[in-house]
Image (cartoon, rainbow, N blue to C red; front, side):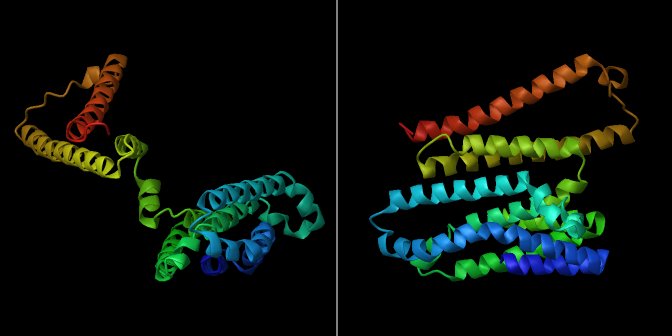
Length: 282
């Protein structure tokens, strides 16, 4: 998938910024792949061991994967720290110095992904990899179409990183254009959902809590939409009850923040309460 995604990035860079920028991106990408030397040499011996001992050596396999990930990340940090020295050797390629850490990060995430796909082969479900490659290519195409025309080489490198970590193109695009005052509540809602859905060791309990939280949130969304209609009708008939002068004061901001915190507390408490009653000891 990484080669396919990088090829898509190269195509967009060539169309948007010309052959010189395309060459710089290709050089930076090739240089960043030095970190794969660790993974390639290790996998030659580690892959067969995993397939042979995945039933009775799972704890050891997990520990070795953790050590490998730490080594790869450490190598990434060293290369980024000494990237200036690397580009002293190639002074005519310093144009890709700014995007080199992003390209390195994309390679690291790709290696981490490859290190976790043994299970698909063991379970004899290789089509999961194929589906992932297809979705990744579509996501990368969308991100490149959005970022490369606006940011050039940096946009292409960022698109590659976002593809490797599985960021959906649509969600990222919406996040770029939706104002911060609308994006911030989405982030808070995601954190609340994570908290509610991870308080129990019982997966079914966590699922029930998330579903209840979604139901409560849907009720608030519907209520907000109805009140929007009521507000529009009041304004249409000339009834303006909005406290314009008080709205910009510190007291109004403190009150709104306090009400927001109380609302979050209610969401968490009510989402956890019902499922806790049904699942004693969860």
